[in-house]
Amino acid sequence: MMRRVFFLLIVLALVPSIIFSAVGCGKETTTSKVLRVNLAGEPSTIDPNRASWSDERSVIDQCFQGLLGFNEDLTLKPVVAEEIPTIDNGGISSDGKTCTFKLRHDVTWSDGIKVNAQDFEYSIKRMLDPALAADYASFYYNIVGAEDYNSGSASRDAVEVMAIDPYTLQINLSQSQPTFLQLMALWPVYPIRQDIVTQYGDQWTDPPHYIGNGPFLLTEWVHQDHMTFKVNENYWGTKPKLSEMQYKMITDVNAELAAYKNNELDMSRVPAGSEKAIMADPVLSQEILRFNQLVTFAFEFNVNETPFDNKLVRQAFATAIDRVSFVDNVMNGVGEPALSWIPPGIPGYDPNLGKEYEFNISKAKELLAEAGYSDVSKLPPISFQYADTGNNRLIAQFLQGQIQDNLGITITLEPMEAKAFEQLVGANQETWAYYGWGADYPDPEDWLPIFETASGNNNTLYSNPEFDALCQEAEHELNNTLRMQEWAEAANMLSDDCPIIPLLYREGFWLAKPNVKDIIPTGVDGEIPGDTFFTLTYISE
Picture 1 (tube, rainbow, N blue to C red):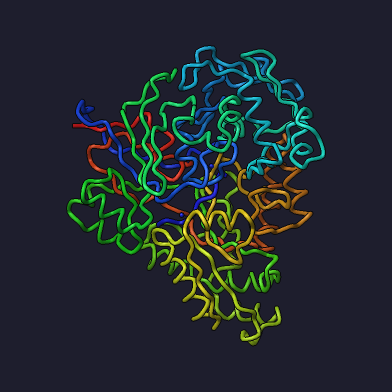
Picture 2 (cartoon, rainbow, N blue to C red):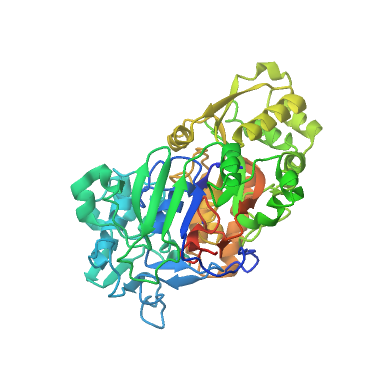
């Protein structure tokens, strides 16, 4: 995370506490192997090097695979790499600063050409290219030369990612990094074909130019309507059990549920407020897919915008929101109130962190007065932006009501089309917005450094040199006890500075047809539960 997620209600030591859910077992059908799901909107990009949102990953992970990947329990596994590099097998140097990957020799692109180490070298350096402005580039600044190249102060040749031979990739790090192998399992460093990008430019992601090395092939993209995926016949691994997938782009969650009931979709989100009715329905109650997620949603301020450039104002707003009421009345008990950023299931989660922001109207008003706004009419006009998809409008109206009822402050709601909202946030032009973060990999390093000053994902524009220094120390600390202490100190600092108002730890509540088998939700899925392991999903008779 990542990866950013917008609420569509709706908007990546290991984690044994994650609950993995699968829908049934059954005999596979020979008549229909098409899975129809809803992406809920048009992705801004499906370029692995550029992507940062969950809906984008749902597409990318079907068509591309990296050197490493995650098992269902989020432990690492080799994918294109022959094995996970270690000191014992010679893949990691004794000082931890050189990582060498040996590639399998049988991996091919969807057009049959062999995948080689140069494809990874090209992809990583392309992702770091300042002209690309990739949100995840800062995740890889520990690679020698990466930060200098990304900042424009050094050439591409300074980046020490090298294809030693067609099946050997060597990466040199500035400092040892305990989580570097997990970063190498993420989509920004999936391989990309240089010849395809060179030939087609920005159109290389359009079918039929979207050449990947994953189990599926994107064969059709009707913008704002749907995508079609078919099995990659040149896939080098075990072929998917499905023959085809269709990703719809229905932006209204009520229309999505109607399509599900009309047998036009095989899976569906559930509109907020209808959970209890679904659970009471004699048919639909048998089709519920419920699962824990490593996702936190928060109201995130642009701290450069008045009045949110005042920490006391931010703290006042954080204390004026009744999260328990939100979960109980808006979410119908689905999810858990959040007071801190790192969710349960991620190392570093602290159930006591953020308790000073528990709902307290009197305290919130005191904080506003201390900030100089005992008379709230002196506040400047305040707007709130959100993606107008699914139930986001309901979430925005809840916020509007809380601030009006509890503080006497009127805020203006600004609904936006999902793609426009993503672009607004990406350009740091929001005033106050609602979006979330889902786990890219199970470590606090995936959650806290996104608020570093130089992070491409820091859309709050929060900047604290002490916080930055703590994160940088923790990122390279080999003593895990000290590392976790540093992360805990950074988490406390972030909570006190309050650039965000954590609201909800998301719980998945979907519907899935009884004949859809082996849906396996994990904490690092994209927008659709189980999409990391859609190769295992099948349709029964």
